[in-house]
Amino acid sequence: NAGVTQTPKFQVLKTGQSMTLQCAQDMNHEYMSWYRQDPGMGLRLIHYSVGAGITDQGEVPNGYNVSRSTTEDFPLRLLSAAPSQTSVYFCASSYSAGENYGYTFGSGTRLTVV
Amino acid sequence: GEDVEQSLFLSVREGDSSVINCTYTDSSSTYLYWYKQEPGAGLQLLTYIFSNMDMKQDQRLTVLLNKKDKHLSLRIADTQTGDSAIYFCAEKPDSWGKLQFGAGTQVVVTP
Image (cartoon, rainbow over all chains, first blue to last red):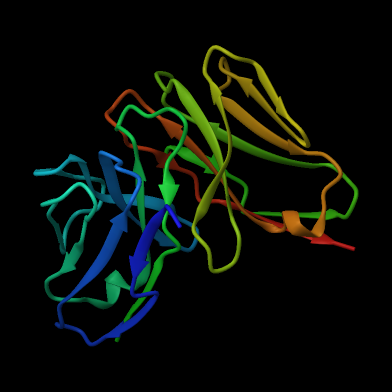
């Protein structure tokens, strides 16, 4: 089924560990982004990409890295996990950054850092 | 989403109308959105409105926009138990592709 696929759905990390959250879309969307969702704070933009090879920081980029080597994939890397990174992470995509009809969201990755 | 504010909780009886309110601060926002999040799922776009519109109706959903007061509302007519979810208001300022979300309103529909 076409859409945004995120893996894994759940993950528990120890403080200091690293991991990569995967995001893939098969809709040929140029624009992809990562958000984190925390209770009472809505969704906050971490990083985004307007096309392959182009990435930029969002509102809360510290502690996260991204790359965009292909149109389809936009992985999010945690280099040294901290408890403050416990959150639900969503990947979203759209045809272009100027898309006015909303974004397609993945189902999320629930991350716990202990 | 400190620039977009919503009340955090709304309880409504099945069959009644629900009204979810939102205020935003960026007057340059050209598009405003309502998303729905069901438990354990991602966000689903419900509807959107252009800033040059006052109202938009889509089946049971009515969006009202008061641009002067920067106030957006979502009315759900004949609320059903399947409408229980978190509803997010979002604005899109002119900056490239960045949606600014509110904290979300938890809507609980009781029989």
